[in-house]
Length: 171
Image 1: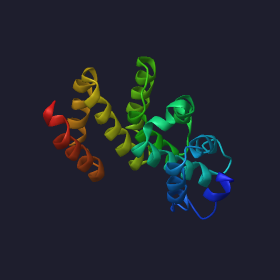
Image 2: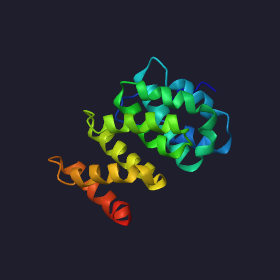
Image 3: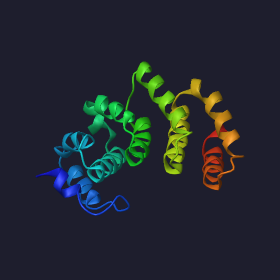
Image 4: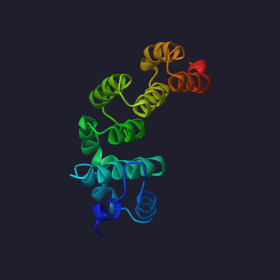
């Protein structure tokens, strides 16, 4: 099956067949490797949909992407916003070494300044999820969430308030 052909076509505002690809992948583990390779595809639509599918797979089966962790970490260097926001969501779901986590946290912190509001929101959520698992991150992330609760961007304020109620208030 040619995964890039299944993910191509249309425009970046649609997910195309990525949900069908996710369903296929969750029935058999062969597709994650192809999806990881598709992150490097020349077509931005294929890259975006591959990232979307990988993010949805990690929500249910993060262990399936552990063998591809290094490729996912390399995807942090992608300039395409759709790939960035999905990678941001994937990072807290896969086990990272201390060095990899440090790199991921720095990247997520940098994404808080991203031009894409979706990427910023995903990065903030991921930082909070990582801090929920790693108490050493909590003071720094707590300050960030509290600061962003006063952001001029309504979407950022709303996300920070929701995260504060769900996580930060318990820290």
